Length: 261
Image (cartoon, rainbow, N blue to C red; front, side, top):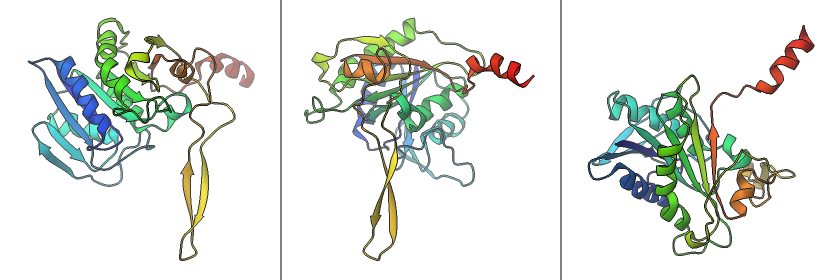
């Protein structure tokens, strides 16, 4: 199996090292793991592509490349340049430092990389490690992902539902903010929504008197509805959410047509 890995935390991120271990185990001794990841951190860029300017790509070692672009850029660079059009069998994106559950999905470059792979017709899984007081100070805060990641990927490859039509499916996986031994198993969950919290801005005045704005995230341990992604993560489970890039609100189509007729 030929596996491409990428992320949004950058080529030197510790989560990418964890993902390399996972991918190497899945690929097996006769497989290949190729890395094309952003040269610099690209957190929060979503499914952005560098449409209006070129990006430099550099080979850092065997099957290891850094591109000055987003995770979606890296997937495109991998397929059409590094692999010269030979698509991989699987794309893994992550392991993100922090959760990509609930509304975070819409901002996540980790998700963006997996989404681009799906749009290119390649099976894809995004993986993220939820952080909290029970794992953030461990010697390995990615322990849950490191220990359970290969098993989750293998389960999805063996038993997951992989649609192949327009807007094919891909998967979003979040590991709970716990040590590996305390992780309770896998649970399929829809994308949730953290109510009463949201991204915002925080102004700061520079020494020269100019105002700068920092983007400020909402509280990450605000629970979502029971059974949805962040809620099951906070209950100790690995959440698995099937996704598509199609953003149509299908449940509104018939009523809207009738209303506008």
